[in-house]
Amino acid sequence: MSTDLEQNKDNAENKSVNVSEDEEADGHYEIQDPDNNEKMESFDIQNGILEGVSESYEEGQIAEKFNFKNGELDGVSETFNADKTTSTRSIYKNGQKNGITEIFDEAGNLSLRQSYQNDKLNGETKIFDQGCLIARMTYKNSELNGFCTYYSQSGLPSLRFIYSNNKRQGGAEIYDDKGNICRIDQYKDDLLHGVSQEITSEGRVIATYSYVQGVMDGETVTYDLDGEVEVVTSYQNGRVIKIDNKAEPK
Image 1: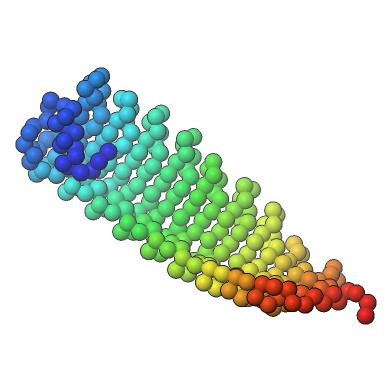
Image 2 (image 1 turned 180 degrees about the vertical axis):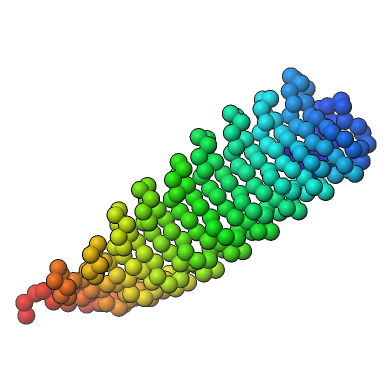
C-alpha cells in the first residue's frame, strides 16, 4: 500500500464514491474494488495527512497494516500471509525504522530478526532456518562490526569471523561437525593475510599456510602424526617456487 496521500486520494477517487473531492478533507476512507465491492484499502486523514491505522487487502483478506503519525510511519507496521499470519513486522518512529524488524516464513517460524536505529542496522541480527538459529552478527550504522557466527543444523558453530567497518579483520575460525576448531585464518581488510592453521579435534596443528593480501606467499608446512615437519612448500605471489620433502631420506 502506498503511503503517499496523493496516490491514496487518486485511488480513492477512482474506486470509491464515498471520498470527498476536497484534498484536505478529514475522515475515514475506504477504497473498494469496483468489480466485486471488496475492500482494498482503508485509511484516515487528519488535516490533509495520513493519521492512525492504514490497511490494504487482497481478496478480502488483510495484507498490510501500518500506523501513521503526522503523515509518517510511526509504530508497528505489519504484512500478512493469505492465512492472516504475520509475514513481516517492523517498528517505525518518525518515518524511520527504530527497533526490531522481524520476517517470518510461511509456516510462521521466525527467519530474520534485525535491530534498527534511525533506519540503519544497529545491534544484533539473527538469521533462522525453520526456526533454528543459523547465523548471528552485529551491525553498527548498517555495517558489520564485531563477531559474525554461523551455525550448523545441530546448533553448533561452524564459522566465525570478526568484522570492522564491513570487512573481515583478525582471526577467523572454522569448526568441524562436532563444534571443534579445525582451522584458524587471519584476515586484513577482508583478505586472507598472515598465517593460517589447520588443527585436529585434539588441538594439534597439522598444517600452516602463509598469505599476503589474499595470495599464498611464504611457506606452507604440513606435519606428521608426531608433530614433525613433513613437507615445506614455498610460495611467491601464489606460485610454488620450492618443495622440500623432509620425510624423504637424504
